[in-house]
Image 1: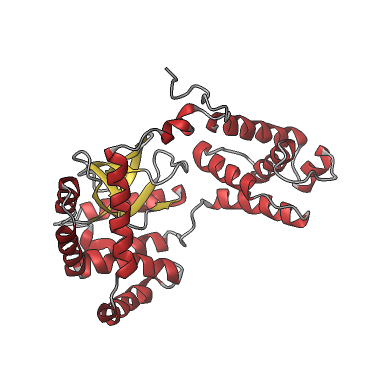
Image 2: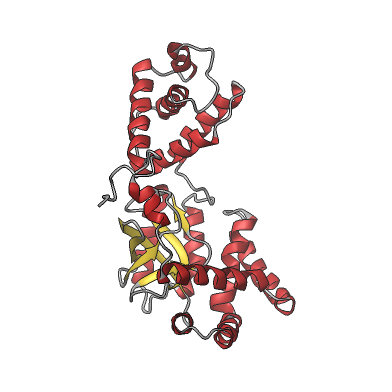
Length: 324
């Protein structure tokens, strides 16, 4: 029997769990997952309907007026859309679920739709990461859930996130994100914890009634909708700019670098050392056409030592090898 961490028998070079294990026969759970995704996508494809657009525009404008100085307009509209559907105008969602119940006869889908009667907002901290679920505790400390992982992108323990959740149709306590699953860079963890403490000290703490205050608190802490910390963004930008200056392009290399930064949280004295290491790792592994530069010249371009550059090139190589 092939172990999950053994090389895949197909010869891809990947671990079995990252390759053919995912291609086994379709199960009932797979079919339910596909149906869930279809039901949610269909909802967003047809809503808001024309008759609801004026109300949504008015609602979204109130959010823009409060958050425009902090977040990009597109992000504000995305947040406002979920607030509109699941808090302000729950009747729209309830009507959609009722109509879907009339169209489906499979007991598993009908049971799932029954569980979908209460979409709710969740802001939590990741406490564990598994193959299928993230385990997370509400910032108010009153609930722990398992949240279905949407991708293989790394999620470090301790990071906070925001989304609306629904049951994923499996066990009690297992959920999926309805639409936007937003992870916050650890730069803003203290601001989130302070907000949670302030909210918990109120007479009747309610996250549902305090979401606007939550986003304002984040904005005041310097959050602008960025996916990465200031340090991580600086490393990625430095590596990307170097590639552009030398007429090279490698999205694959930058993706490995992004995952490395989020997963490993390296503590470098100089962020440029990691960027230089990424360039050397990319050159050593043919991520782009080789540069007509010595290793010393690459290091000097980033104003770091060749030893520092080599260290992070090695760290990236080991990380990439473990991921595969």
